[in-house]
Each structure stands twice: as C-alpha cells, then as structure tokens.
Image 1: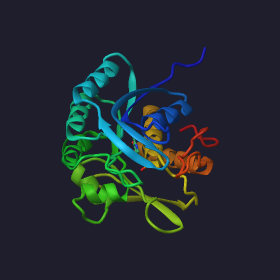
Image 2: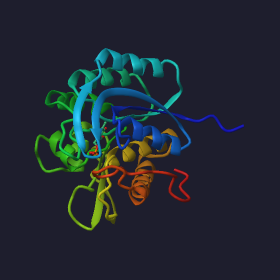
Image 3: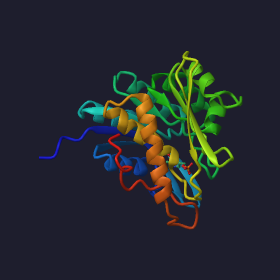
Image 4: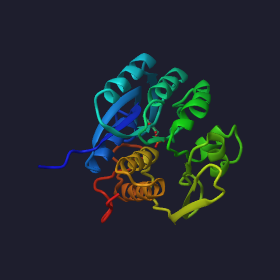
Length: 263
Ligand code: PLP
C-alpha cells in the first residue's frame, strides 16, 4: 500500500484561471505527493490579462473553514497567501496561533498586474499579528518595502522587525542574476542564493509556488534552509516549464519535482 500522505494546508485566495492562489498551491502540493487541504480567503475574478475583481470571504467563514480542517486532519504544515482584508487576516492569525506546525507566510499585497490583493488596514494585521507567528515569511521586493513602511527592502531588518526568518525574493529586480536573501532574526548572518535568470514572460504565480513548495518541504521535517533551497529549485523548474495559455503572461508550471529532489 502507498504510504499515508502528509497533509499541507493552504489558506489563500482563489484564482479561477488556475495560475496562482489556491489552485496553484493544490497543484504544487499534489506534485509533492502530499494531500492539499484548502481554505479560501477571497474569490478573485482574474485571468492571464489581470485581476478584474476581488471579493473577500466573510472572516467567520474563513475561521470556521480553518477550524474544520485543524480539528480533524493531521496537518503537517500551513501556507498562508492572499488574505484580502484586515478581518480575514485577523481571523487567520487567531486560527493559526494555537498550532505548533510550520507556517509559511507569503505576504501577498498586489498582483504583478497591479491589482490590490490586501487592504491598507490589513497590512498592519499581517505585520503585527500574523507574521510573528510564521516559521518563514517570503516577501518580494515590493512586499518587503511595504512591510518596512516604504524603506529600502532589507531581509535582515525585516527579520529583526518581525522576529522571524525572512526570505526576500529578488526576481523582480533587474539583472541577469536573481538573488534571494535569507535572514534569521538577531543572527547577523545573511545567506544569499543566486542563479542566472530564466528568461520568460510567464511568471504568474511564482510567489505561490515558492511558498507552497517550502511548506511541503517543512512538512517533511526539513530545515528552513533546506526548504528554501528546495522551493527555489521548484520555482526554477516551474519557470522552465511555463507556457502562455492565455493572452497575457502564463503561469509557472511545476509538473514534476526537480530531478533527484527528495525535498
Ligand atoms: N491571485 C491570487 C489569488 C494570488 O494569491 C496571487 C499571488 O499570490 C496573485 C493573484 C498574484 O499573482 P502574480 O503576482 O504572480 O500575478
């Protein structure tokens, strides 16, 4: 008989075109041979051309969905993505504060196409209540800048501010080399991960794939550094496989685990 799969819970927004959010997270979890539980925080109306509408789910319903899963399933790790508004962010913080499993927070603020996916009021809840509960926070440059009140993105500063490890992703910076920076609070030691850029316009959902793959690796009891290295390999494989399926930028596509990756 096949081994019992680990359960990885994603708490995120729905992207009906399947490129990002819950749909992308569930696909990535399945590739890891794990079972994806999925709590929806917001319905978006979007396709490859952009986000047309965002409808946050009632925060009580979000809390009830999380409780239904955590009360019943042996959840081994949690990934948190788009939250939408302050009420939902607060409900998620309350719901995960009692768990002891690894939590990866992708602090989604705007889509690459420029749509707001988090209200201004919610940013404070994410920074002050949710991020401190995380095992790892994975902002991109714009998200780190917002969390630092407009200051220059700095992984070490943000890790000290939040009190938890931060992986600052560098994919949105210019240049042929992409560098992600990992910092642990109070450690004063920066780990940099660099690789040549994979040139493709099809990068929708990279943040979702990264944070979910890291959660899958933490569920398998790997260290934060090992999980980050694995997550980066998954994103690179997803970028290589990405194809444009709509009129706009296509989504990263993780079809298989990178060769030889035991995550
Ligand atoms: N839609 C949802 C539901 C998301 O969670 C995200 C990102 O996390 C996005 C859209 C934005 O994706 P991208 O910035 O890659 O277009």
